[in-house]
Image 1 (cartoon, rainbow, N blue to C red):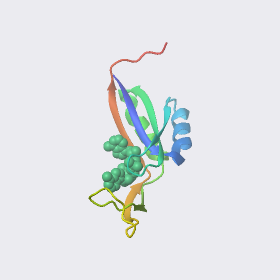
Image 2 (cartoon, protein in one colour; image 1 turned 120 degrees about the vertical axis):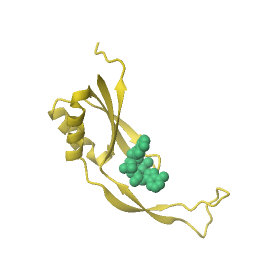
Image 3 (cartoon, rainbow, N blue to C red; image 1 turned 45 degrees about the horizontal axis):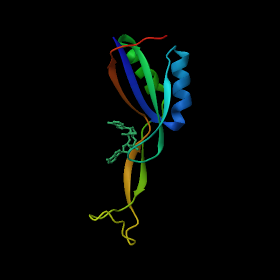
Image 4 (tube, rainbow, N blue to C red; image 1 turned 90 degrees about the vertical axis):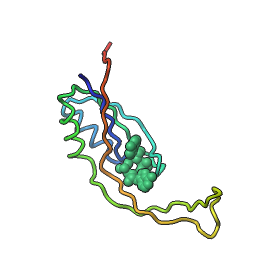
Length: 113
Ligand code: 2BA
């Protein structure tokens, strides 16, 4: 059974992760994506591998992608009408960024032509 791994990583980690995967013989497709919450650019890698190799891929990503860290962001204050009042420009919120979000799905069919 093949697995399709999706790895969402920070844009700044793209080069180091794709190089490390390639060095270990894993192919990846890089998609330029945007986080739904922060609306910042990130990278989604699609990596299709045999099930028994999945943990090797995850170990490489874990080893080389940046560590999670907490940052303060300013989010616009929106009231119940959907308006942004002039007096309340924003509220500060802590979010964790870095590391990677990884999930995998079963691949029903794979062929290289
Ligand atoms: P964003 O959606 O831009 O989220 C960036 C970070 O903001 C998240 O980091 C999380 O720490 C925080 N965050 C997200 N939604 C939040 C909310 N409703 N309230 C408070 N804090 C929130 P990560 O969890 O490491 O996620 C990094 C990126 O991975 C996300 O960027 C998104 O593009 C993707 N992602 C995370 N979980 C996902 C999921 N279950 N399905 C699909 N994509 C996911």
